[in-house]
Every structure is written in structure tokens, then in C-alpha cells.
Image (cartoon, rainbow, N blue to C red; front, side, top):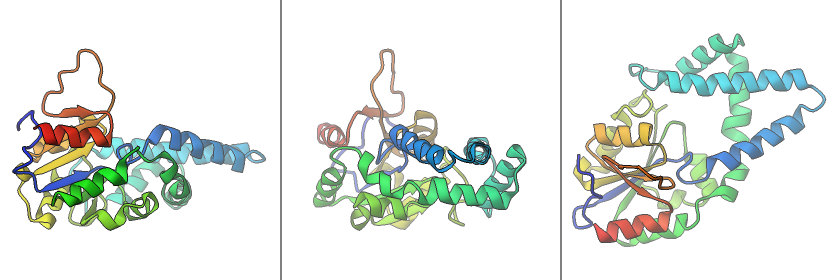
Length: 238
């Protein structure tokens, strides 16, 4: 796996992570935490129970990252979260739907990465195909971000033919198959070195991580960018 961004003469597709990549995730989570606190101000115990369920669901995702593929990943994650939180799976599912799936949709555009749509439009104008690989179903967020019309393929770990979270390469392999391109002709853009760069490396796909540069970083196996416009600069200079 090369440490350089794939040459523009070879590049045919750019595959994008969603959460933390297309939008800034920490401020969105803070906004949702404020909403949750406001909704439960008169019922703090219920609020704490909601937080426990959501935290267990997120922890279950991290625990399942290195588990074998599942035929129903969502149900497996819910079951594990319910066990860890000692809350019925149906209740966990309700909290997840309200506070993780549906609740943030109207906030996503507020925290979109600057230059997101313009950069994707420029990529499309250069003949590149665009795809999304997310740990969770992403269509509603892409619609809210105003970029769904630019995306050719949308895949999530929850899809029956994936069934496993990154850094397993299965999701990227499915995306590449649907795009009809080879891994050496694609670029994956994410925000987590361990998860996104790990998946890209396993699938033999070049990778850019959207994150601040830090002293001592070696960027082995991937390149860093601090913005979507900078991604274009990296591609033009590769």
C-alpha cells in the first residue's frame, strides 16, 4: 500500500466516510447532549437511563469492530448494548432512533465541513465517481448535507452484504465492486487513523485522513489533510 495519494491519472473514484468526515462530530454531539438534557430536565433519571443506553450502544460498536461479520449487525449491536446497559433491546433501539438516527438530522448541515459541496462538485467535474461508506445508514445525512445528488454509491456496515464495521475491509470491497473500480484506482477519505486508515490499508486503497497535523506524526500508510479544499491540492500535487 503506497504512502502517496493515488496519481490523478489513475484515480477513478473517491470514497467518503460520513460521521466526523463530512461534518464536525464533536459540536454536533454537544448540541444533541444539550437537547437531551433539556428534554429530560423534569425527569433526570429517565435522562440518565437514555444516556446509559446510547453510551452502551456506542461502546458496543467499538467492541464489535474486530468481531466476525454478522448477518444482522444492527441487531447484534443492540443486543450487546442491552446486555451492557441492563436495558431491554427494544428500549435501547428507541433511544438510538430518537437521539442518534433521527435527532441530529436537522443539525448536520450546521456543522458541515467548509467547502464540502464545492470540493465534491469539482471532483465530479474531473470525472471522478463518488461513493460513501459509513458505519451506519447515511442517506438521510447526505440529504441533509445537500450532497446526496453527487453520490453514486452509498454503503453502510449495516448492509446485508457487509455486516462488519471498519477497520474490516469488507465495506470498501463492496463499494469498489459496486463502482466497478480497482482498489488502486480509488481514494478513501476518513477521520480516524485506526478505523479508516486501517480499512483502507487492508483493502489496498490509498487514504487521506481529515485531521489536524501533530508534531511527530509519520502518516505511515496515509496522508493528512485539514480541509476538503486541501484534498484537491493533494490530488493535484500527487
